[in-house]
Length: 467
Image 1 (cartoon, rainbow, N blue to C red):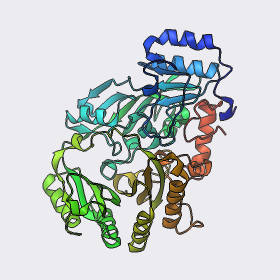
Image 2: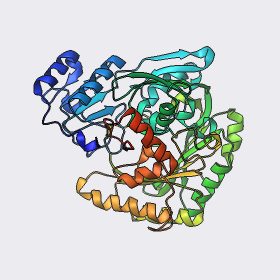
Image 3: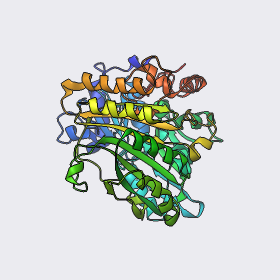
Image 4: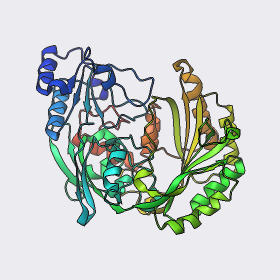
């Protein structure tokens, strides 16, 4: 059975949906309900889908009931944790949305530095709870992202060089599979499934709980450093970040400076490097490590300071941006590549255009490439182009811009593929999903998919069809 087997469900018996709704009461939201429009809205704008029912689960038993219903009635199933999927996989037209956002239980074992966390938690909620104990697990760079989606995709965030990807701290999981079983999954029990969910996305079931390793991360040196962006400063920034000790992770956006209160008016509208700096170690040592970045050029703004790690996430934006995004891995950003980045940013007509540079390496690179479904351990830099805009009629223009950007940094349209991070892939076709899982990784994932989801119930994702 292919993904097309689950349609918008005109065949579904209305009385069956009514019975399901009766079971869940006000936790089941249908068209016409006052909460319906808010419940079907996901983070990114321009996504306007109308599910037949939205169910807010509170337990694994709820998840099993919804999975069984969707499978038995051939209804498309969307699984939503934080709702930050670029293509809007957290909502469906005519199917069922399984909303995990009410599942927020978290249980710490401080003595063993581990935690069980339900997958409706956001990265910010988890980090605040762990931070109260002086502990942390690395997720991404946005607190509003659900831990379910970011963990299954890999997790590249502020601790990636110090402690690796999110999946490198995943010790076990509880999964509801397509046949309605609740499985405990780890390196000894269902090891094939445990391998697949560490980077393979939502293809293999619904994760209801994760068991994570925690690290002692309390006081850090962190915050935003804003520098003028020229090809020279961009290339030198990347070189410094690559040479820095593992304790330092940087996420730098090259973009036109918005009219932020913290920036002098003279900087508004100018191209800048807006870099988030996180030194997870001794603060005094961190000052010495960050000094060369401050010396690249006179900072436009310097908000890097000692803080608790749990303070690193900015407030969640109220907006629902419409965005065109492309991502790739590159080995280096020299002055020539930096010039290409600047040239493309200056040509964009988007409301906000940015090139995000994440220098990788460190702990992430010391895990064997075959240990998890995340296959890009040797990649040095993740480079992402994003164009945010408001007029949906402009979508082809900005999609073309991000495509041209990607081709240019790869060396032209005939340049060799450098892979992709599944968490940042939009609606770009099957070939781009293959780039996330090259060679034998794809074949292994497809085989595991056949074992646990032969009917491809979980296809509303960057899909790996069963082999």
